[in-house]
Image 1 (tube, rainbow, N blue to C red):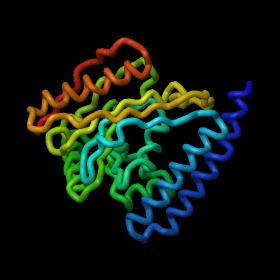
Image 2: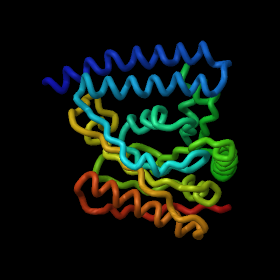
Image 3: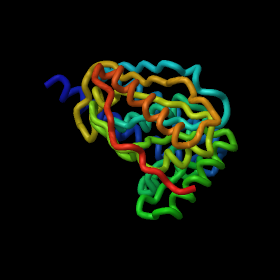
Image 4: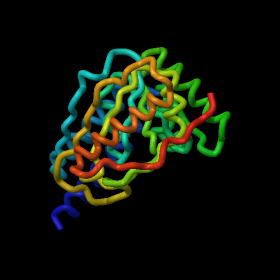
Length: 248
């Protein structure tokens, strides 16, 4: 009962706060990207405080030293909506690779477009993949930290989904590549109203070696992420289907 009440209070604050972010972001929409990022980072940090105070959820981030200055590719498993929040407060210029439909959300979609988030049209096939690749490469070239969730959707804890071709494409053009693992779904479940007290860990691993063949890079990347997820959850390492390849 207490978890339900805490979750109710959390949502009663979270959604108006998010609406306020969208309104504030709209006011500064024509300002600099840096100003827009400050608004988004403030919102993310407020959510983290709200989680701790209301729901009893602590956040532990390890390995921050592994994220270099400038452009890079951050590849993380995806268990919770929280995974799309954390990087707004943890990075200077995060660039998410996200579903095109998210740009239709009033406020958030406008802000995402303004800072250069990279949309993906899942029904667009090869041309859409190439457009995503160009946009993400350009974002990294100007110093953005490109964040991709290779499963393409949220997966519950102790489950592993096949990786989508986008990460395979990006692994061939953006370096360094930083593997990340999280157990966020243990506290903030996939499509779950209830938020369970506990600790969310975000583990940032060392960058992968550069100069390897793309297939080997993706194999090492997936192995690193899945092994760290298993360590965080205390479960055996998952063995999902191999990542789908994509043409250059």
